[in-house]
Amino acid sequence: MLLKDKIAIVTGAGTGMGKAIALRYAREGAHVVLAEINEASGQQAAAEVSAHDRRGLFVKTDLGKTESINSMVAKTMETFGRIDILMNNAGVTKKLDFFEVTEADWDWIHNINARGVFFCMQAVAREMVKNKAGKIINIASIAGKGFRGTSNISYAGSKGAVIAMTRIGASQLAKHNINVNSICPGATRTDLYDQIMKEIVQREGITEEQAIARMDASIPLRRSNSGDDIANMAAFLASDEARNITGQSFNVDGGLMWD
Ligand SMILES: NC(=O)c1ccc[n+]([C@@H]2O[C@H](COP(=O)([O-])OP(=O)(O)OC[C@H]3O[C@@H](n4cnc5c(N)ncnc54)[C@H](O)[C@@H]3O)[C@@H](O)[C@H]2O)c1
Image: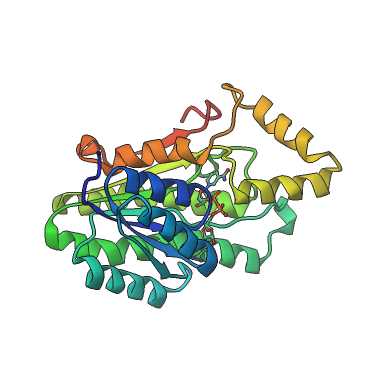
């Protein structure tokens, strides 16, 4: 077991890659706090974590609100007494062309994907420094490195911010023995992926099968990720095996981007 008896927070853990990561962390021996805005999916995922004989604690959390982040961290400390791992996964987007992006779209996306990621890192790191240990993993995206097939420019900017904050966070938290890294997924089959595919279908008048086949054909290894592809990297980065890796942003994308 890579994460035996560790205490991990996974944001956006109700569905998609967050759920796959929460379940993988439990299989690796961690107790998991599922910080999720959707009560039904959060409770369900927490029950599945608990079925692995580990504690799965759902805490209803809105990453767009710092008071909600702070109370989730307080609840984690009250329940478990420490935090070893933060998996900053929650994120949102929708398909928009350049001229369609409104201020409301920008604020919605950046509030969760960039501001929420930072204030969650800050609130958790405040606890980690007390133990002089911690692993923070942010979910960025190859969009943050300029992937042309991104859902929209504002989303790409928010993920670029995550990559930059990963480097600065790693540099400023290193003296506390806290590692900060990112994962940059490519196309990954989740609810968010399905939503974007439906939006492409509507815009372009092609079938969903055609949209998916076109996406897969653009990937050198010819397959999009499952949530487990991301969970594999997330388990490694959260473990002691990655103790000397920090400030990095790793693509998991079948070869879509090199940088
Ligand atoms: N799916 C992809 O192809 C892809 C590619 C690159 C990056 N990503 C990133 O991966 C991460 C996970 O995406 P996914 O595809 O699993 O998405 P998803 O929509 O399937 O799951 C996201 C989860 O986050 C939760 N969430 C949304 N807003 C929240 C908030 N304000 N507070 C707390 N929870 C919130 C949702 O309820 C949901 O359970 C996101 O950061 C996304 O940007 C996804």
